[in-house]
Image (cartoon, rainbow, N blue to C red; front, side):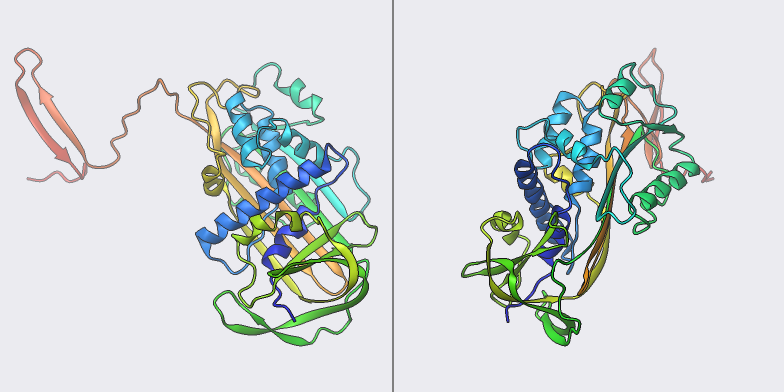
Length: 390
């Protein structure tokens, strides 16, 4: 039995959630797969965590919404960072794909939502609201420095994820605006796994072995792909609109973060063929979350450093990207999958580049001089302003 791994499954499960009704779904999936591979590889290298889960869909929606007001330079960097290359309109297609005009049915497999909240102290440009209305976005305006903003944003995320992610902010976000993308997914397998999942060994990344409930499915109803290094299955959900690719390594080392780029076409469900097969997949659940901004900076989605406002489509004030908070959850068992994700893109007010600030909040030097003669009347270092001395 090949060694199973969660890494690729966690990425692919969320990639399969992006609705295919907007734009070129093939181009979208290619961008999302590349984004997932990059995020997971870099996060793994940075954290070394055993399990990592990201949501390319909610991230692309939240950054795509922010990109509507970004400068030309900002639009280019966001599009590139999200995997769209030179397609500057790519983030907008992701935003459109995540927008749902009508509230979905309570039992719909997938619900998605986007929103933007402006600080009430931010001076918006005259065309900002009409531009957003053209994208069917109606922003909220409130005090982002106040505690109510935390309550409202967390409440929106909880509702958008059908209660799966109740909190994304722990304190007022401040800054100029917060753009949000969220999703909730719940569906049953097209073909359920066996009801009983006996304990089986599973090798962790550090080489140790644990015992896990290993789900089993055999038959002719699935599509597979394999080569000398990997085997994979494209598991279908009831209804046929969603699927989860699971890639396992033939060796005991498992799938590494660096493998994902080479497996991009696998994660997109390409070249899978119907065959008789047998699947062993651990039952698993995971709650994950982090600030993705450091990783996105390394990928080229850097806070705007232009001389003018970073988001002139929204405001002439100097604001830039500060944090990109993402929380995700997934639960996979014999019957199906439940998953949810939320991303909050938070901005901060930047210092006017023409404004020089002097903040003596640590040891500082002084020199008292006579401007007529050039004599230094006194000079020194002050490290404790409260210490009077002799």
